[in-house]
Image (cartoon, rainbow, N blue to C red):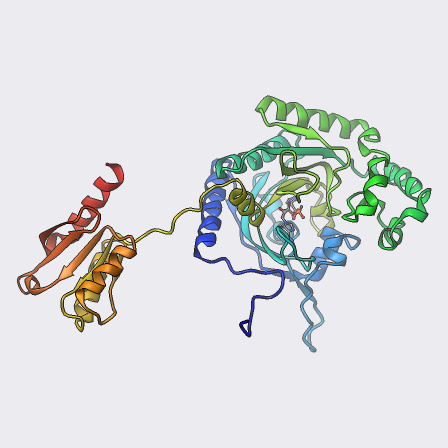
Amino acid sequence: MPTYRAPRGTRDLLPDERAVFDRLTRLATDLTERYGYRPIETPLFEQTAVFERGIGEVTDVVEKELFRLAPRTDEAESWALRPEPTAGIVRAYVQHGMQTWPQPVKLTTTGPMFRYDRPQAGRYRQFWQFDVEAIGDPGPAIDAEVIELGHRFYAEAGVQGVEVLVNSIGDPVCRPAYIATLTAYYRGHLAELPATEKDRLERNALRLLDSKDPDMAGLNAAAPRITDHLCEACAAHFDSVRAHLTALGVPFRVEPGLVRGLDYYTRTAFEFYVSGREGQQQALGGGGRYDGLVALLGGKPTPGIGFGLGLDRVALVLAEQGHAPAATAAPLAVVVGADPDDTVGRLRVASRLRAERLRVRADLARRKLGRQLEAASKDGAHFAVILGDELADGHVQVRDLQAGSQRLVALADLARELARAETTHRHG
Ligand code: HAM
């Protein structure tokens, strides 16, 4: 056992896996550009109050899972690592006066989040999210556009059979009456409630519906449904979101038990699952509308909607579905030499080729030419550039390791020749 290991609930992404994350991140960038989002980067930590107020104090994310940073003695502020990016992005929207920009302001970010959760497959203490936020449009058309964007991300990433579950969780007009009904329902079953849920009942009954405790499953299935208690405006909004989704051809299912684990949501709520695995598997991603959040964090009332997609879970599902990870690129050429000690010569030639934007490795081990060539083949390199006696009049041997052929090339033509050979190889 090594003395030091990555902290529990975190993991190292080794090159092959990191390459999958790179691919997903590039896809996220490409897709969000197509949909008119602009990138934003907010700090990995914020004042704790941003999360407490934004996400809600009676949520798992804040109550149990927040990574609070130990305060330094002389500072009054307290900070926590971000468990999700929405609260920080909305804080930035307010701080930088983005309500004066053309609305909606469409922002995206991809990066690590932190939750002190109980680690298991697909649930980590440091995980990656691809996030989008569209702030300043009350919907409902944009709700469908955001959901469609998420759905397209999975399709283009190669994840098969992703289904969208949607719900409406009402707004300040209709939710209070629903919560009263729900509280009354749970009070009638007080003896069956686990201790934590009992404790939460009077503070935030909606959270009980979202409980991960298996003892709650039966009670929750029979609980009153928010969709039966929506006010007229919320019901119309929800109808329109569904009509837009249908028109766009996004497959979805209404799931009245879907309430989401964060307090800022109003109206539209959604989650992405691999079809048929909603029960056993955690969501691949989720999001919703948060029409009260900007005001909650000190801005003027402004509606918003967004999602966060868990990239760790996408990578897991891709592997399960047999999606081969992208191979790490092999060098186009390795520069080797007859004189084992002439590392300067090999580096010089490699450096010149790299300046021409070619992928080149220099063999820097002081070993025989035969061993250098063997290593070049093992690397999967297409060519070996061999420095020998011909160097004296400005030439090198170029061996095509795949075809087994070899020819003399002037140093002055080397970069061009290699680049041309690679292009022919790729397209031929
Ligand atoms: P969330 O549902 O808490 O929403 O998280 C979104 C996604 O992040 C989850 O569906 C899951 O894929 C991934 N995720 C969450 N926790 C973990 C974990 N411990 N390990 C691995 N993956 C995890 C939000 O965070 C909202 N900010 C989404 C949003 C954006 N709503 C509006 N805008």
